[in-house]
Image 1 (tube, rainbow, N blue to C red):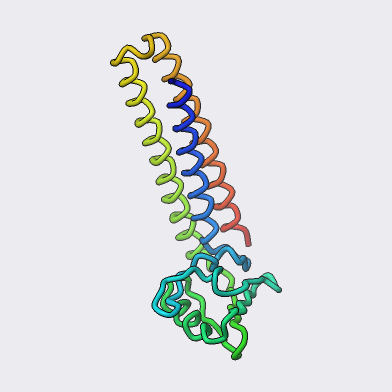
Image 2: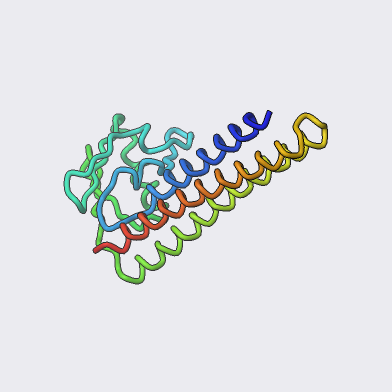
Length: 185
């Protein structure tokens, strides 16, 4: 019973960490990365679609991304999506390929991005603590229904706290690494 509660908590905490990792990949650093634009939503024939599903994305140079759509008719839609996004990138279209020049970040923009990273890391910490809270409620319910003893409840509670601490530490490490990557010139 307790193992099931802990397994569910671990699963949810892992998902929080994965979500943070994917979220941080979309935050711009000083160099070009396909992950920066993969999740950009493009209105493709009236359907919002991720860019990764419409085109191949590559980084031939450290400051350049190239996007080659599989359907040439999607070029205008992709270009429009970039202009409407908050990425601050202007696409250059040559009829077959879209080029995105990634300008170097200013010091002020780097500081803004580190604040965004810190906010997302805090959101991940909150999600992990919510997983702990739900797990603790499940453990209390098991104890209340006399399915586990009071001693087992406290052992499960301690195990749940250890898991929470471990995943919060992982989230903090991911956030620090991303902040260092952003501040790197």
